[in-house]
Image (tube, rainbow, N blue to C red; front, side):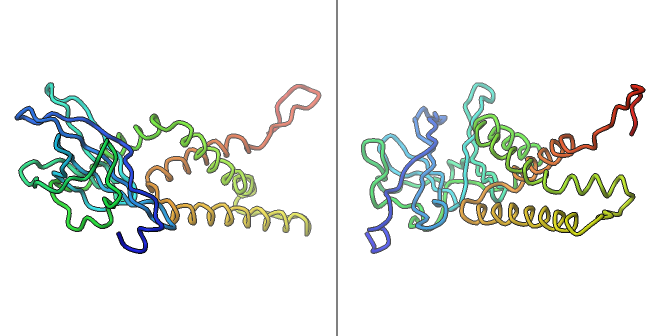
Length: 243
């Protein structure tokens, strides 16, 4: 154990999926996380056999998710890298017999993914557009609270500038501030947008996430904000709507 690891938390598993190979052997596909010290914890997907030995190791990543489904009566799993939009597929033909990596269902104290060296046992390719939509959609369903918070964040961000967008639209490209307070309000709104985006950027650097996921909620938040900030139509005494 090196000096850095002495102050780091122990490696840990998150997702764990059981798989049966063609020869009947049962293995586990797991996400093994290390310690990012300051930023997010690095992660690898690994395959562990019944003897608790490593059989396959994916490339080191910042954010991985395992997606499994039944195909022709066989349970198949893929690993999706949400930051790079890459897919890792199990490739048993390139598996090897590695060392024992865990004890009592927990990774050994020295089993940090960042120290595993070369990856093997996985075939890597870019995710297709349909896979990106499917995997990102599955994340929204699997983590509804995070999805809701993302929508609220991007809606609040958009609400700072959509009133200006509506004014530009109604005035044919001109903001037409009437006084100094109007100018200050516009600058305050734009400063707020810059602040929200800066926080989002810092958050991404601290804990990277999918650009597709963020773009979806940024667009959805914009639509919600445009609806909420739409110009009100006045109803005069005659009862007729006036634009």
